[in-house]
Image (tube, rainbow, N blue to C red; front, side, top):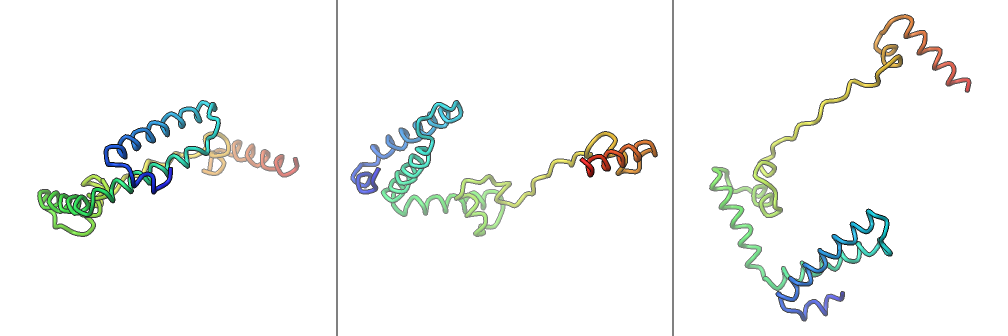
Length: 144
């Protein structure tokens, strides 16, 4: 849909269009997953249209809504007993949680022990029999 056409719509019509586009994307993604979509590339076009609608809605809302969001972020940081820094404001405006905006680290999952069997035993200093079997296996792979 053209941006000019969207600019002529009132905010209620734009919200309806936004809902319609979100629904279409949702349905098309299911069709793609089931391999029934006629044109899978259409998702790209729908997402662009959705972005246009959201942009125009933001433009029509005016700069007051942006100021309200950043003010709310500063107020939220003050209520949590934190100084109102740019990081806190940016984190709140981006919709992040307080833990992420504060910079809490995520833990990484533990590494697996590695391969199980003769190969790992040979590498880790297993028995002589296991080392010999691993060498023989390597020699066969080089030949064949």
